[in-house]
Length: 456
Ligand code: GUN
Ligand code: FE
Image (cartoon, rainbow, N blue to C red):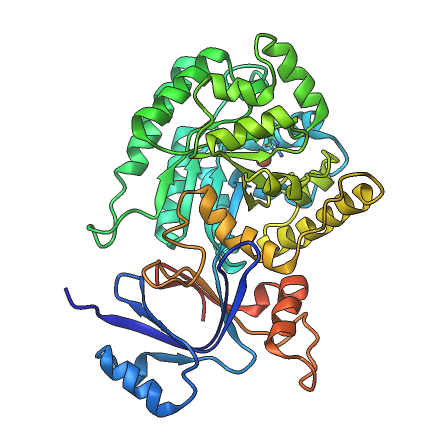
């Protein structure tokens, strides 16, 4: 089969090769084929003749070439590994309470409204569009317990062209009377939801779907042991991923210990019910014992680090350096609306600050935990997230053969929050400024699998 090139980018690319290797590729020529894959990547193409020769070799034409300016660059798309789509209307409010009180006062009442698909129709399209505009090319979503509204979210994600993992929330106990399921309906609706998503029609029909169902026990407090078991079985049968919350808040941990006294710790509760494996994403993981860390590593499960939420709900400061030292997979999450920001750029900044808090409180002790570096933060926002969703061979950086999920960054847009000074701002400084000062105005275009899904 001959490769048909549909787009070519000429300019600077920045991506992660590993946690410590951030690569700048200057005068790069990157070709995307008509199936959205990176067909070629040539470096240091510094003259027009070489450029024309390469284009000719790939039987493409000049009109396919997008020429970036000196200040513009391409970045891999961001992965939000934990986001409650249903909580988006609450983003920015309710920052006065810790987790359990916050759930009861603000979160459950809002989520309950999604029993009406009409309500979901008002919210979900905005959520997905806003995340795409912020550069989130892959999102791992919690919806609510409601089957029809959650199906609608899956459809919206697919129609808007985002890569998405969509979870129908499960909760059969310790929940408000008006926002709870029976175990029977919880399992039945979950299976129906999984079947629905797996059977969504793709365009073209022979490509793999961008939308995947994810099994979503809300957290151990809201799920009976029977429900957790049943969900573990569904995940296994369909070979699909799992997400939940783990060790976010000390009161939460105490309740879990009370509810499941037969298990050693919180992590073991999930493990015992076959919910901890290489496809599992656990949000937070702040207060884990060394035994729990070992179990997570052994099962090759991942942690979604949600620093904005961890600060906002006063849950704690996650020691990401320790997770990384243990060899645990880590990605970033916004955790809207525990976190007030929808942007992974915000997660990057709060992850940086959280790691400095950890460093500051460790630097007088025996074990010092250095704060996260810019290459590490970049990796967590892209490749780290890709690892959590087991797509590290598909997305996350610009390796030939991967799919083109990318952001075109323009530091010079009208009203840009980045202060630039031509005399001194080299591309590495511009990149760092984007990561700490930029916002969605600087994200000129967003691509998922080669298709422009947001921007101009
Ligand atoms: N634990 C259980 N449910 C939730 C939720 O909606 N948000 C957060 N941050 N933690 C939870
Ligand atoms: Fe959450």
